[in-house]
Length: 246
Picture 1 (cartoon, rainbow, N blue to C red):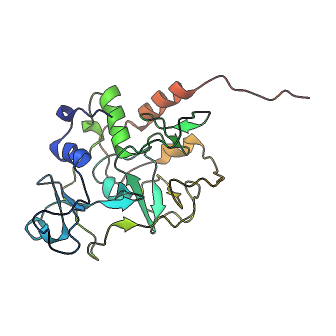
Picture 2 (cartoon, rainbow, N blue to C red):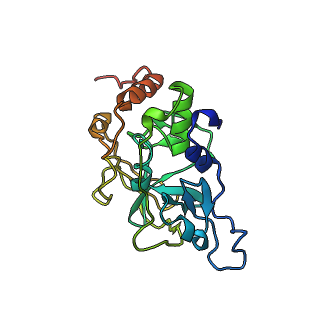
Picture 3 (cartoon, rainbow, N blue to C red):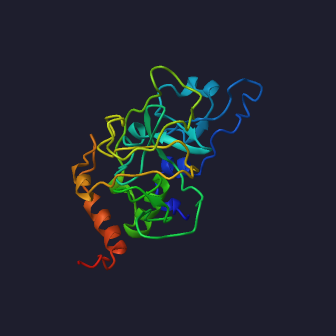
């Protein structure tokens, strides 16, 4: 995936390229020294022992789910418009993937697919990760400024940092399930026992019209939701196949 750094703010460029969960060189001998916090003001990754000088800065905890970096949807939605990005519910929290993930299969049949990497998605989502949506916006809209929020304050959980490791022990559910938490801006979520699960799972499709109710608490003056949806939906439309009537 190609992301033009010249069209991204510095904090977002570094967030999408930084390597998290590596051991902190400064606190190499300390326990729990994985760098799982990102400082938006300094544009660096931090371990829990590095936090003191950054307590007044905007801090974002990066979590790991099935060896992939994820961010809580509530945190991500304060920074960028997350409409159409598929979310998952795990450990009672909704998360979105930060990066595009490797494809598990090359087959592409009918259904819903990521607008950047063609990964199979649940309706009504159009992107499998934040980086896929950002890549799409850079390619088709020429930038992301209209989709970013002016976030003045972003703090770590009041309960303090956890280890950031999210256990894949929940069951796949349709978006909008009663088990999904509120506060996601109407995105819904998908519970997943494991992203590599091969068991057959029944998914209830939602009408795309439900997505029109998406309204983040803080949104840019320009509302591009329908524009993205129409663009990708037109690309996917084909001749409907109907069974003969007898």
